[in-house]
Image 1 (spheres, helix red, strand yellow):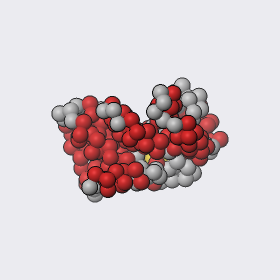
Image 2: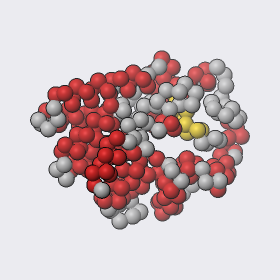
Image 3: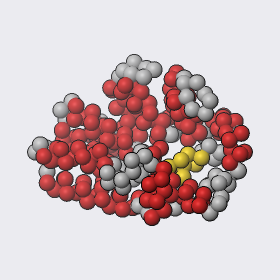
Image 4: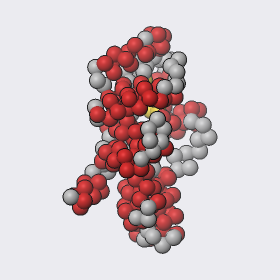
Amino acid sequence: AAELKDARLYTQGQVRPEGDSCPLCTLPIPMPLNQYSKLMPCCTTRVCFGCTWAVEKRGMPDCAFCRTPRSEAIVSHLSKVQARVDAKDPEATNYLAELHYFGFEGLDKDLPRANELWRQAAELGSTEANYSLGNRYCAGEGVEMNAAKALQFYEVAACLGHVESRHNIGSIELTVGKCQRAVKHFMISAKMGFGPSLTMIERLFAAGVASEEQYAEAKKGYEDAQEEMASPERDEAYKIFVRDYEGYTR
């Protein structure tokens, strides 16, 4: 059973989920998603800053995806999100959980409510919700700290292609001394374009844990992933909207 689980864990989730790509330019969005894109509240669709900036430059300030007027989106924002939550939309449910967690959009910070919504979103199939629940159990936020449960949520998300979850699994494996398992996970997430994972492979290579071939493979995969995410429109937008932006590979 353990071997079958490992086989599934190491073979699934090596392609990022559809929601990680901008629906307008169809390019994968750099990570973390919240830093390089915007979730449109009117339609709960994530659009990269390159496309939102391109639309705004054309004098079209409305939603870049569904064209809902900005004024209407602001007024009916939460009611539209709640309607989607009531319809069991996993991304809307995850989004409302984030609003409660951070206390955005006039809502009070409410960790128990956020965790409840994340559980609902996870059951509906939200990759991000599984990742967030993993983080809560890892840190003991609103729940009793439980590394085993955190790992379970990270594994579900990783098998669905969630890159940060894959990296976190590698970090947990490394912490408990399972270095070769950690290398496997860092290799996968590095080749999907996650900089911190490539950094870990570099360190493990320097420590004699990862091989030169593994480091070269991870570096090549990372560079290919970064190239796939790049566009002139994004580079222009990120220089404006992303704090301390110095390029994808910083």
